[in-house]
Amino acid sequence: MAENLNLFTSTQEVIKKALQKLGYDEGMYELLKEPLRMLEVRIPVKMDNGQVKVFTGYRAQHNDAVGPTKGGVRFHPNVSEEEVKALSMWMTLKAGIVDLPYGGGKGGVICDPRQMSMGELERLSRGYVRATSQIVGPTKDIPAPDVFTNAQIMAWMMDEYSRMDEFNSPGFITGKPIVLGGSLGRDKATAQGVTIVIEEAAKRRNIDIKDARIVIQGFGNAGSFLAKFMSDLGAKVVGISDAYGALYDPEGLDIDYLLDRRDSFGTVTTLFENTISNKELLELECDILVPAAIENQLTAENAHRIKASIVVEAANGPTTSEATKILNERGILLVPDVLASAGGVTVSYFEWVQNNQGYYWTEEEVNEKLLKKMVEAFDNVYTVATSRNIDMRLAAYMVGVRKTAEASRFRGWV
Ligand code: NAD
Image 1 (tube, rainbow, N blue to C red):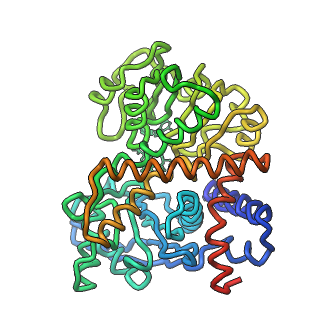
Image 2: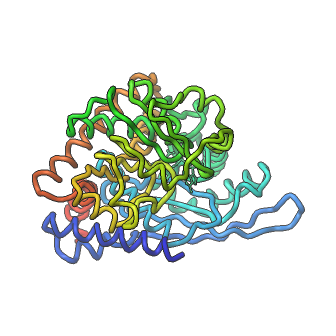
């Protein structure tokens, strides 16, 4: 797909710039511009009608110099080799930014889970693990949930791996149900991380969260928990949206009421008459704008009209490179996705640590450790950006890629 190729090449471009700024030569870029390993598999699944359907799946391992690779498995009709490759590179950056002992990995299967029965999904999930078993494992590459995969799918995958391994292997995968070794706080971790990053960014811009007006695009897992956390902190969430439209109230929306009315797909605006469009939502008068839905929302076309003084990317890739440039030139503080949404992989790491030691933490302990990681990460990126006079995205890539580059050099790979 053209936009996925774009995602891949734009990721490569920023990695190249980041390595140059860090003083690495072309050889390091040659190593890091693509995943070290990319496995393509074909997974036969017996469908409910008795016929066998063969699905194509992927697992990319960007670089394992620092430690095992880690990243989600996506079940979606648009999964492609390029997308999986680019996303594995993003995972290296995220792990580097929050300082986890991992490299980046990612997986995907081309399928539409919305059209599949639970039995078919279970057989596909188990088939994916069997097909990739040679390269995944608790000390090699640790999968997690991603688009259209969830705790139940993680449970089937963990069970399949444990059967093959003839050993109970909870550390093979994260995002599991709590009873199978999942971590408390994992479901809210991304939004929790975005909240911490918003508070840090607001401090830098002398904005008191209690006086702040916030607009959030998307009311799914990331956006809805974020709206709740923000309103609990006393901020006014003046705008939210879903795929069908947006709601606006300059006095602040009643988030608890909206959460109560929302369906399981994150849709709530269809219940109201006075809605505005997603396009209008992004240009609302506010202090903090959080795209938490899909890619390519802030573009060269609308970046000039964004009123927020802080933009925090909870979604992956919501801002095009042209828009990044415009927002930076306008002095808007743009907190990039690889930093802002790193809370999920951070608590996934905590889950793996708890599995490995067989000792489980309270939700307060998880949140306390997450807070420390995210504050440090924001601070590191912000310091690099201001001291080098570069934008936060390039600074985040520099912080993110540094550990993997150093580890690759120490190992003598470059
Ligand atoms: P989700 O599927 O739970 O929710 C998506 C929300 O976006 C829904 O409210 C949906 O109605 C809305 N939406 C869909 N299409 C839209 C459109 N065209 N315009 C406006 N809104 C639209 O997804 P999520 O888990 O909340 O993820 C949202 C973003 O955050 C994605 O980019 C995802 O990659 C990123 N992210 C999520 C996590 C996580 O842990 N959930 C972690 C890292 C990054």
